[in-house]
Length: 399
Image 1 (cartoon, helix red, strand yellow):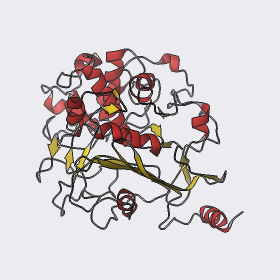
Image 2 (cartoon, helix red, strand yellow):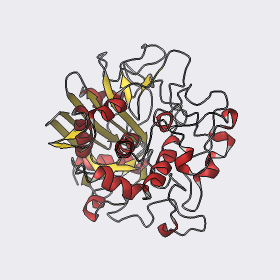
Image 3 (cartoon, rainbow, N blue to C red):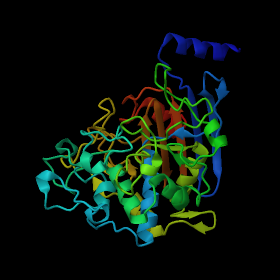
Image 4 (cartoon, rainbow, N blue to C red):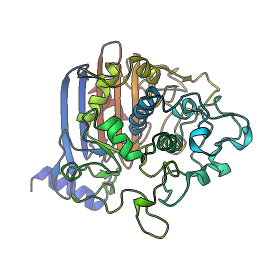
């Protein structure tokens, strides 16, 4: 065993935090048609002594929202969804903020986090046999002070509702729908909650470690999970019980995408090329422009600019589109979103969960971008020139 590995294993054994070095980190830079640089270092699985590679898939956290939105926009182009229609029509039941019962909620609101939903009632622990309608019926799920469409609050629950709408519109289970609607057409070896990934991809799963080196997620030992969703309340896992639209939380559309940075860079290239991948047209340019445009911008009193379930995270939500952040629009004081420290517009999304921090960002003016993740890192607003963490600033800029 080499000295570096021995030291890493000793650190994990004693539970000491990784002060500066992630367990693993992967970073790509790209332009519209090429990978410019790539870097992979550290361990995908420390116990197995398996080093990280460029095509190892990780639970990429909230970047999943951006990929889910690619599916939404394809359904819009197919005429199966309407961004401005009351989603209650698709759901088959009335989705309403009890304090504003006459105000319809639309996909535009859900995708831009202006729906007035909150995460106070939960979203991550809904069992297979539960109904998202019951979750939405909990008064804690709503912001009673602000009407839909008037206030930004970054809310994970928006996307399980979106997934339920997608299922009702298509008649297909979210994980299956995303495979043939987005992931396979783009040539990605990716999946939600490991459903649809082949054995070779699962064997390369990146174990997520917290900042103390404890395995937190996807410690699979090369095996497919026995249940890819949260089991039914009696402990069973029978996906034949699935009903379209009943429970959009099942495959974690808000954070459950497993994808490599190599494939994440392809998503960035798709955005740079306004919906084209290679010579194939995946989305219309107008659809991509809608995703990337700012649909909410902080004016000092129209939203919550931090992450409500991550109070240690800083205030970096200064402008938001459809599952995209527009960096460089903050005031540098209260709202500090300049991750790159260059004052330029960068568009994309960040992710954080279970000791992983990730990002995919494009610079539309230069036609370049970056995609990355790091594991075993602390989630804190420790950046030098933004409210992101120091490791995110380092991964974004390469410095």
